[in-house]
Length: 114
Image (cartoon, rainbow, N blue to C red):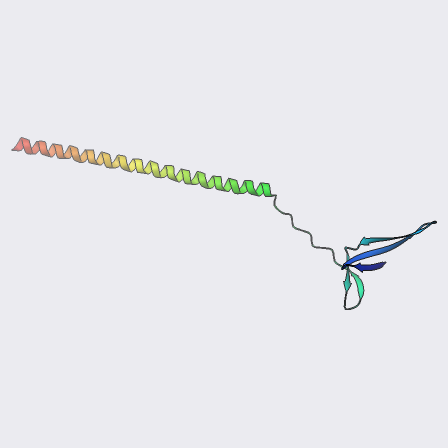
């Protein structure tokens, strides 16, 4: 096999002979490199396979699902907080009503005993 470097690109040169003519075909030699130390063309190892990449649409859907779950969690926490606030408010009101009732009973005893 013959190789030729043109503009820093290595080409494989083949000569094809037919009855009427001879053709020279040059193709890019992607599996060959030039060793400057030895001055020879040597085969290169095949490139490492590219690991599969996640589908960007699927990744966006997963990200969106994570955001939606976060929002639902925040909404749930807000609802629980609101429910607790209402329960606390109700407890305060009931407590105030009990105190008012006790004050009224005490007032009635004082007025009745006086």
